[in-house]
Length: 199
Image: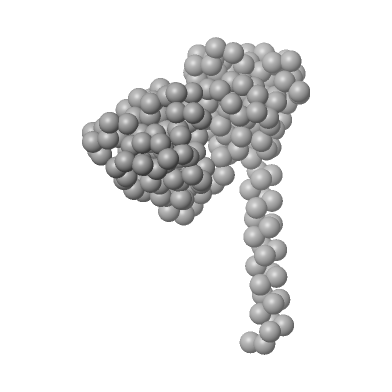
């Protein structure tokens, strides 16, 4: 195979990857409604939205047509968080525990590869370290860690929970280093961790 053929094949693969990425992006959708039970004005969202109130007066119900979304009770992806999968949320305040409206949302990308995270007992990646490749329903029971204050997410997208068995308030983590989970997690002490695997 000569250089031109290799370059043509590489170019074709790049086009295929871009087309697949575009298809995945276009197929993700969440619809927000001003009133409960999908009433009132609506806003169809196919990407991250930092301020839903720029499109609607408020958001009191929503429907996830496809994809996975993190929703937040404050603008710019701050405050309480909740993971929404495909389905209807006619009165989500009761379901997800937000006392106010959804203010922002973020797409959770599909991840088909392996999952890997390192967790540390202290901030700045100090203290005992454990490597996770699967869900952990209790940090204390499984790793005998008194606390979890920093982590390094190498692969995949994860949720941390304030209670064992994936309950309570949550924090969405994408690949990256998190030197101080207390600061970004509203001072929550995390007790369980789960991979985001739904497609």
